[in-house]
Image 1 (cartoon, rainbow, N blue to C red):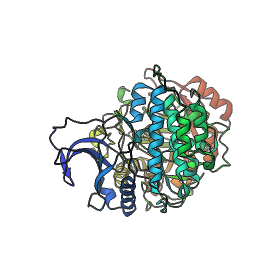
Image 2 (image 1 turned 90 degrees about the horizontal axis):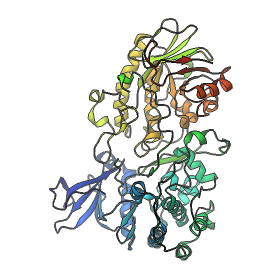
Image 3 (image 1 turned 180 degrees about the horizontal axis):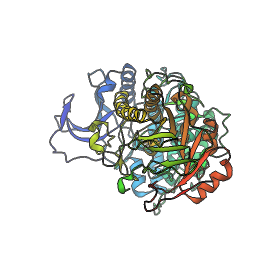
Length: 608
């Protein structure tokens, strides 16, 4: 945690505490370093004003305060003051200096033998205290473990619940962080018991010892599936921790060890000197799993939303997939993990078409017009991808995608490309400052691959304002004579899971699809294989897909969109794979990576 010297000038106050530094923030609030009149340091969680009016959230916050007050022990951070009924609810806990486990592993690599033993015994004692108080934590994860000098501290009881009270979770909604959730949190969220925390502890200890998560599907959706149906990946976990982790990660809650037994088992861990740290290996990618036959669609698949702070030391190998930017403009956090700010709704179901909405998604968004009222592009025809600059259509091309700044091509079906989830390079000044996503330090979050600021789509109010601007571009597309619109960067949430969720992306896309249909335009899903099953409920008519051949995803898009898929590949291998499997069904073209206009240096265009 970052903090200013103790004598720093206050930046505000609440409940009699001077706020001397901002420690971090999340979707639901901000945590500050506070100081009492006597000089005592506390961590003060202040709820965002927009959530103070949400009675369900207030109830959850009261529940968190009550849960922390019920728990006391050497390995938890006690609450010292709170006012959940204030106009802007807040809670103060004892300030514990130190990094989170997620930060420690990201900065130095996995822990060694003695460190793992100390961590494991401290955490199991913390769980014992939590469970004896009749509380189930439900969100034990690396960013909720502080590495204090005298042992770990478990923090963030924001989604815990008392075992003798009904959970706030309602049918179809559950809460947690997918890589560290238990199977029953997906399948029966009302019925989770202390055994759920044991499962989470098993995942956490594997992560601590190896730097890798035992369930890591490359996307929240696939990770949730693995938690429910697949065996954990325990590569690199030495005995006896491996056997202990296997028992903790049993799919059957009754088969997992109870806390007292687990404490005895963990005492057998070696107390040897810490070996040299090694960097954690890269996780499996979303692309490799998306096409895996190990994901039978006959099972109910969990639809989940990742919460902040859990990427740790790993990044997706596919972070740059699907990131070809139009115009390129001739040129082509320090994360602060905080207590209790990642309260994210998640859902279960293979198709979440008309089920209840997350609190992060507008329940009042109008239904999109039926696809039959707009003209879809012709299937399996020659097409071209010109989002980097328009030029004369090649012979036989019937469909083309161009930037909304360009005019449509005569005699073809024209698709209008707009940047909907990120800000075009050099255009940050065109957006209201508060619509740019910011990290814990207040700095704008950028997609560094393309130097584009990311838009803050986390609240309904901001999504409405963003949609208003993008919809103005859609109006321009319609006025110019385009037949369809292609909102780019729908998949931004997959690159920034610490901040954004799939539900938020879908909520914004619904606003755009409704408007496009009202203007007589079809609307394309751009990439984002994770959300193909929801394409109808979002109102998407066809797909524009980059590198589905390269990543073995063409089949999923073809099935979801009834073969109305326009494919662009950027490598010879990708074109070969796409053509060998789909040349008689889909529209396929290979372009240069910067999609420059014909005649420019680097221009390339090939077809099957």
